[in-house]
Length: 80
Image 1: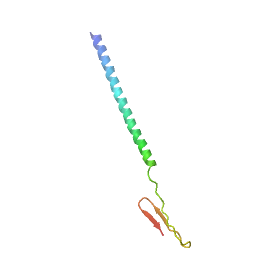
Image 2: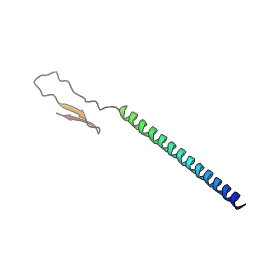
Image 3: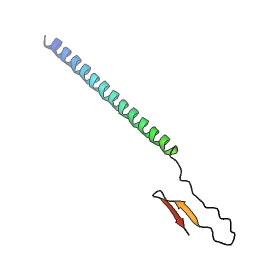
Image 4: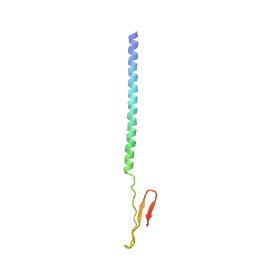
């Protein structure tokens, strides 16, 4: 009787350990999948971010110096 009880407890312990291992592995894969989706999404959104456009002013007079106009992200700067 002692050997049957020992065999059943050992089998139950191994089964419980395998279930915990399976749960941990599935949670690890789920977290890795979520992290990869976030990384891929941020990489794609960085590629689709609009690039700053440099604004210029055309002058008709060739004698006058052309002003420099640019946008630094906080507003348009015009250097006369």
